[in-house]
Length: 268
Image 1: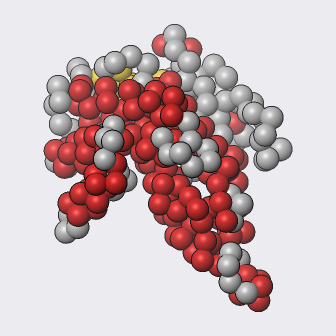
Image 2: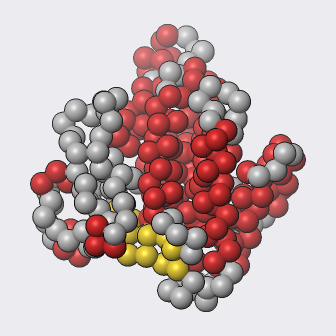
């Protein structure tokens, strides 16, 4: 899913240019069509109860009891690649990159006729991440068992593999996935706070609330990898940007700070 997201960002940049190019160029290099099919891919990856607007008609409702073993609702979200497991880390990264793609290239997506689909893709993932943040210091980061799932390739609608849910909190840290989830929710908040078509200020504020809380319990957790401090710094900056009235200035500052640094997070 992460590799698909990198391709999608490149396609967005090219699609906006090619929409205005002569027809012959569009026939030879139809990146707008490639963008459309890339966004359609995310609909094929949907888990949970599918909406009436679902365009991939051979998919059906699936994994409707996710989270039941913990008494929470973890339905929805995206399956990971060809698996039927929902991994929080790559899903959060995908939402982060999709959101920034809309923020930076929304006009080009609109010109290609794909802005609505991009907004729907972000909301589908963000809705799940909000559910996964079931309490102030609890974040569910996986549903399903990778080992048993990878031993049996089957349709999500027919799967009979375990659907155990796994979580992180201050006592059982997962600083990497918690930080990336905060980045995803903050980036989606920036995207939905825009006044452009598709903006939803109330939804953006809700996302921002859920983005801030993982940052608080990240500080209490024992870092579980060497890039924790860098990761947390980037995510904190993203959250502040989403909550700032001077968003343009913050975007410029983060872009300047990122030059010369290599961030593992998709936040900048």
